[in-house]
Length: 408
Image 1 (tube, rainbow, N blue to C red):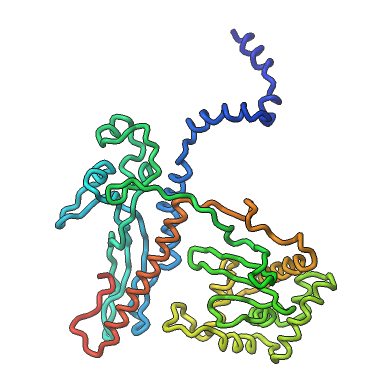
Image 2: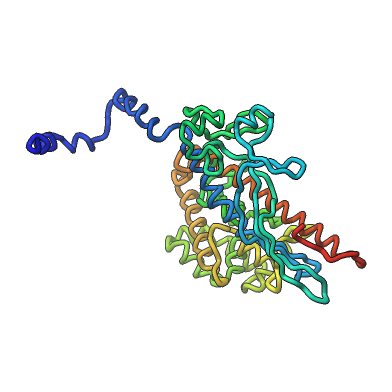
């Protein structure tokens, strides 16, 4: 028997097994086997599970504090966040939810979003530090068969008791009794330089930055032979050399060498250097003062500017947010800008260096977890803004009947 086993192994041609399948007919024979192992919705379940276990914690960690601008000693800090079990509270009674129950009663299959908070309470006479756990801040629709669902890892008998079909793969939601699915969306890649032209035909380099704390779009465009920065926080386009000087890159020669030694690159950058000199901007302080004058006036500022000013905060936290600034070291951002400028110049000198937005390599497929993450982040930041605004309104009153409790 052992000789037969050894002979059968010897007869196997492993090179043939490893060779790529050339025939389309042979490839289609693999589809049923692939579906048995992976299914059609596993990518949706994995995406939602990552959001529920990891992404939601990153979002809250990046925006974990609400501080009153009237009294900075009063604050709320989110220590932890999690998605609870699918339940419903009716007249003070908490009942468990199941997908089938929600289908029959036209309810939404959702679970509470719970946070543990640390907050201060008191007045100028004295402050006390308090904690509160399992505070509900929202309700989250739950994807069927995900890690937050009651159907997760249930066998056929348990699924039958819950009124579910064992062959149902899940991957959808029950909203007001109706089964709904989130479609995959195709988006341009985040945190990647894209060289393209605008409506006027000007070549530009754009980066859509996406981090847990900030999402922004940075565009460097060439107009009339000069390089400018386009950022939503500025009212007008900013000469790129002024931006470089504001990030402590005060030497024009160093900027030119960082882009490249090709004389054609320095020739394309010459007008931008001359424009910066004509505005009498040579130092970082002069550049920051210029940027402060070009900022859009906002009704209230969300960022704590302190002594450094709002322009420096924007350069650090919003401008190319995907490139982190550690200990006020802006050199990595300067290098990234130099790469953007070089790629723009290559596209000016050679049109074949332009990026194709329709090329699949420049796109990403955003699944349900990523889309819900964007929506949750937007609503969470809105909630923080509203809480801060209401707290400031109460604290600004001269006479208050009781101490403000920010955890309410």
